[in-house]
Image (tube, rainbow, N blue to C red; front, side, top):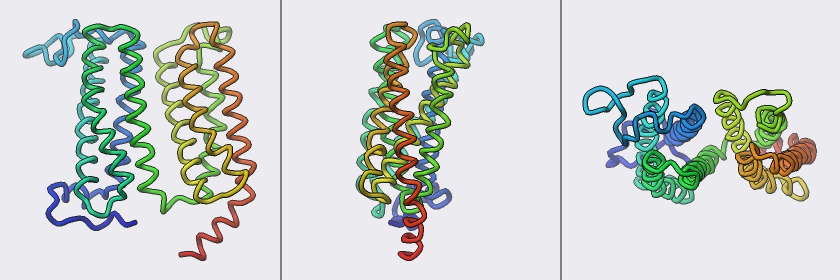
Length: 292
C-alpha cells in the first residue's frame, strides 16, 4: 500500500508531503521512546518531585514555568519532550484518520494510542501530586502500551519494504542486546556496586530495543516464513514483556532467579528463531525478487 499520495483537502498535507506518513509515524515512535527514557532518568535521579510538586509548572521563572535546579531540569525536560510527543501522537493519529490510503489497522493503532495519551498525562500529574508506587507503575505501563501501539503501527507502514533478512537482523540484534540487559540489571550486584541512573536509563533503552527486535521478527517473520520457524518468532514479544516486568522488580533478591530464567528463555527463543529462519532467508528473498 502506498503512502506517497494524500487527500488534497487534508490540513496535514504539508508535513506529510514533506516527510511521508511512514516517517511521521517513525518520528513519533522515537519521541515516545525518548519520553519513556527521560521519565526513567527523572525517577532514577529522584527528580520526580523536584519541581516542588507543581504540575504542569515547575519551580522557577515567570509563573514557575522553568526549572530552578538541575534535578528540576530533569523533570522539566521530561515534561517538555512529553509535550511534543503528545502533539506528535495526536497529529499522526489524525493524519491516519484523514488520509484515505492508510491501512485501517494502522489507523486503529494510532487512534488507540491517542486515546491513551490523556490517561498518560493524568497519570503523569498524579506521579507529582501523589508519587505512589501504584501510580508510578501505571504511568510506566501506559507509556509502554503507547510505545507498543506505535511500534506495531511503524512496522505495518514499513512492512512492504521489510524482508526475511530484516527478520534475521532483528533476531541477531536481540541476541546481542539481551546479555547487555542482564549485565546492566541489579542482578549483577556483585560486579556492579550501584544501580545508577545512567545504568537504569541504558537498560530501559536496551529493553525498548529488545521489544522492537521481537516485534519486527514476529510481524515480518509471520509473513515471510512458515512452519516451525514461526513458533519462536511468536513467542519472543511476550517473553520480552516478561523480562521487562520481572526485571523492573529485580532489585528484590527474591525475583533475581525468575528474571534470569525469563532472560534465558528469551535468549533461547532468539537463537532458535535465528537458526530456523536463517536457512530460509535466501529462498525468501529470491521469491520476493521474482514477485516484484
